[in-house]
Every structure is written in C-alpha cells, then in structure tokens.
Image 1 (tube, rainbow, N blue to C red):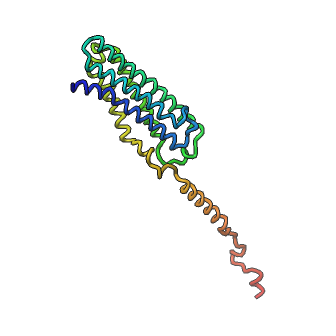
Image 2 (cartoon, rainbow, N blue to C red; image 1 turned 60 degrees about the horizontal axis):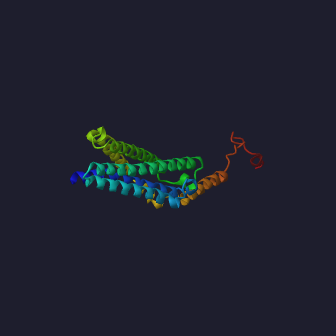
Length: 237
C-alpha cells in the first residue's frame, strides 16, 4: 500500500503544479491589462485549462487506483492505458497553454500596454520562469507516457534512475523556481501594480520645474566695462 500511495502522489503532483501555472497566466494578463492580446478570453482562460487539468487528474488517479487493485493482467493493462490517456490530455492542454502564453508574450512585446511599461514588478522575468516550468512539466509528462506504454517490464519502469532524472529532478527545479520567483511578487502586490500614475506625475512635475527654473535663471551677459573703464554716466560726475 505505501508503494501504491507513493506512485500515485508522484504521478498526480505535477498536475496540481500545472493548474497553478494556468491560474498564474490569467492573473498576469489582468495585471498587465493585456486581455485583448490573449488568444482566449481572460474570463475563460483559467477555466478552460483547469478543466482539462481536472479531467487529466481524475483519469490518472482512476488509472492509478485500478493499478493498485488489479487482479489480472487485463486490469493492469487497462489501468496503464487510462493513465496514458490522462497524461495525453494533460500534454494536449499544456501544449495549447504554451502556445497561448507565447502568443500573448509576443503581442505585448510588440504593442506594450501602459501597465506593462510602468509596472514595477518583474513580470518579464516571471514569464521566463513560466516557460522553463512549462517545458520541464511537458518533458516529465512525455516521459511518463513512454514509461506506462512500456509497461511494468519496460526499461523506464524497471530502472529507478530514469524517474529521478526525468521526474523528481525536473519537478524539484520547478518547485525551487517558484520559491525563488514566488508568484505573489507579481500576483498580489497590488500597491506596486503600476509604477503608479502618482510616481509618473511626480517625475513629470519635476522635469517641468527644472525647465521653468532654467528659463527663469538670469543669463550672464558680459559687462563691457569689466576692463576697469568707467561708464559715460560716471564720467559726468
């Protein structure tokens, strides 16, 4: 039983990470006021991808449960096929999600919104973190499909080192990345949402004041009598 639980947790954990990344993109688009650049309407974005993730989650958990209680070879094979189907759903939705992210990133770089130009939070760096995490989760899902297609007697399932390289290590890096570049730095920092129109106004007023001061400052006109000669007014006295 402990082995079954361990296998299920290893199998299902990245699905929850994927769901978190889906929600991050939706909030980031709202933060940057870039709804018009999204391939899917922002109000539907998270719902569509999380729905796919939920279907994938239940398919994988159902297949895992069938593997745990399998009494025959046919039941074992059916459980593996259900898991492969769940992982396939995850790859389809996640691949589409990566396309949506790249299109949004391209469009907002080409035609930046006011918020994207004045925001103080490192949203560009956060998108790069999302790219890395998405690629790692995708690699892990492809590995898992290959693992279950090969079956319990296949090289991938029978060699423990593969799961450390293509699952544990990749998911550890993803988790570490989101701890270093925590989503709360972008998603919940409402006070730093925009460099603030107040800050921009202050900078503008400062520039205007500098220009006014430069215009009011007296021009240093050379004194024609600076060579020691007196003026004609002084010569009359």
